[in-house]
Length: 172
Image (tube, rainbow, N blue to C red; front, side):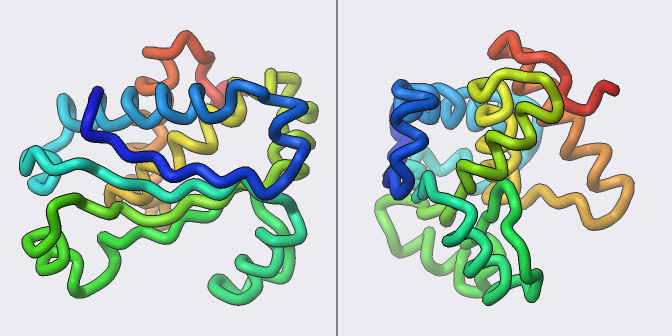
């Protein structure tokens, strides 16, 4: 899928050692998420045929901890943070004036992702694909605050990951 601009920055060396193809994997996940969502959900701005842009920071627990504390009042690291431009009251105006649609920012903490993958006995690749998919869905307006929203979002995650031959991350 062209028209996808992924601005990836690697802030933590561990990413290179653990997932040397992380940028290529990220581009593939981005394409799969957008393709699946366009096919199964009616999101008006996805039909504008404008390039979609995402900023991805492959970071560490320390940085994610600071951001989580500052923006979510949670004094601990987490696996993935998403800052969706769709939540901005000027989003519609911004996309009408711009030649591309800036979806927002995703930050993923390497150490937390690594620990969770080990605990779940899954590969770093598969867990990374899940976290990035989860973050991208947030940028597209999906949420999991209410139970029905969570179920809907999880179903999308499961189906998108299935297109990449990745097992359901919610199975016990």
